[in-house]
Amino acid sequence: MKRILLDSVALVWWYRAPKKLSRPGYDAIFAKTNEVFVSAATAWEIATKVRKGRFPEAARLIERFDAYLEEQEFRPLAVTMAHAKLGGSLSSLHKDPFDRLIAAQAQIEDLAIVTCDSAFQGLGVRILW
Image 1 (spheres, rainbow, N blue to C red):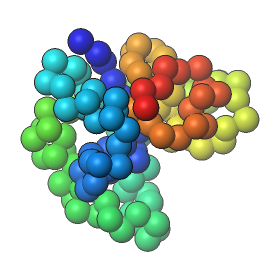
Image 2 (cartoon, helix red, strand yellow; image 1 turned 60 degrees about the vertical axis):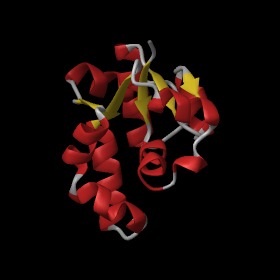
Image 3 (spheres, one colour; image 1 turned 45 degrees about the vertical axis):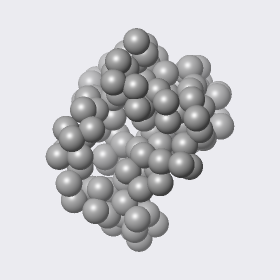
C-alpha cells in the first residue's frame, strides 16, 4: 500500500483529463489499496486560481470539492500548525506557498506527492510521476 498526496494539477487532471497523468501516477491513484490524500491547501490553491480566472476548467470541481473527494474515496488532509511552520521554514528558493505547504505535509505525514511539477524536487519530498 502506498500513501500519496495529490498536488493541485494532479487532482484536476484526475477530475478532467486522467490521460494527462503519468502511468505511475494514474495507477497509484486508481489502486484501491492505496491511500490518496488531498490537502486543504489544494482546495485553497484551486479556489484562488478559479476566482482569478486562471483555472476556469476547475470551477465545477471547486463547487463540489468535498463531495468529489468523498466519491473518489480520497482523504482530506487538514493543515496543522506543524505543517504551516515547516512549510514556512523550508530552505528552498521555491516561493509558491501552496507547494511549500504541500511539501511540508508530505514530509510530516510520510506521503509521496503525485506531481509533474519539478519545483517539488528542491523541497525534500518523494515524488511519484
